[in-house]
Length: 250
Length: 236
Image 1 (tube, rainbow over the protein chains, first blue to last red):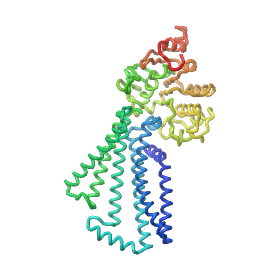
Image 2 (cartoon, each protein chain N blue to C red; image 1 turned 90 degrees about the vertical axis):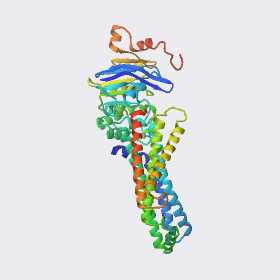
Image 3 (cartoon, chains in turn orange, cyan; image 1 turned 60 degrees about the vertical axis):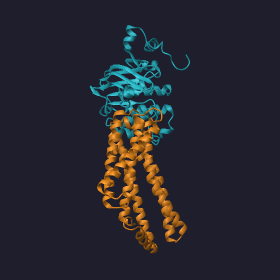
Image 4 (tube, rainbow over the protein chains, first blue to last red; image 1 turned 180 degrees about the vertical axis):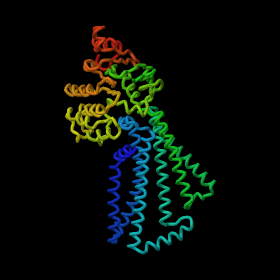
């Protein structure tokens, strides 16, 4: 399994290195803008860092789906399916590497945001007053505090990981069951949307049953959301690996 | 023993393998012969566990083809399949990471014999060099069954000799070797059994020596005889 994870990382490290280089450039822009009180640089640094965060998580996830598609539909598939590893292991390694990368990248950007925010506050006291003012406006449901920020971020990362797993399932269905048939790509995308839609619906129903408000932040709701997405991600993973093991021809 | 029991593989609109039943015993080198599209590659891929049969079963030592049999069966595809970012050395490391029977020493020896530099990038290799690399990686395993799909494709005469030598190096009474090729004459001196696949069906298994002594015919002539009614691609 470790070897599989190692090679999955090897396949995607260039993308990650490029993202890191962009992050470093924008971080320098941000730090320079803060230290030298250059509002243009500071603004651009913040804007580009925010954009890089979103893009990084998106690109890492989508690249994972693209890699799986390539590993199932090109001759490179032999590199995986010739080896004495089950589909559960092969898909598991992909999932651990990709989800791990998203999680690490997500936590990295959350930490970076906290560090940068603290740095900005230390450099400019007015920011703190601004946040307090913002919290007063937002009221009880929403607040800009570190704990809430981390929890909501973690929840979003897990939702994204779940979406990636559903993407894996769609690619596997396309390659295994619909292989060679007309509109297999379109059909698998529709399957992807249906699964996501159904799962979100179930999520909403459970939240209602438990009595949580659909909007706003609370620890209980976030933890429930995390557990829900992780459980469904595991179910989808087993379904996808089963299809690979029993239906996939490469 | 590798056993194919009434194996059929159907793709959309085409039957690639149609009810093939045969047995491959250890201690023999088999040639798998047939025109393009006759089903040789599909059968090999099923035996390697890469393709699932539509019906029937392939068994190795009475066990259905599975993850476990990949430890015993080494398969070399005719198409290049290594990752683009790999070097020749990386290919060896990859095999060593996944196959317990892989010998890096043997791999290095084969690379040396075939003039392949470990630092060469896989994507920069010519078709001949790629063919040699595939054979080296596969034959550096100490597997029980070797299945080589068109190992002589796209390589010059001298390289063919070294590839055939490597294949022969692996042969012993405990191992089964199966080699598919269009170059029937090239294989004739190496193999002792020949399997003919005609229009996706099993068309006979012949002992090459018996063909010579009993039927007074060569493998190439037998091939012409068996496939004389099959329309070949290209210039007739």
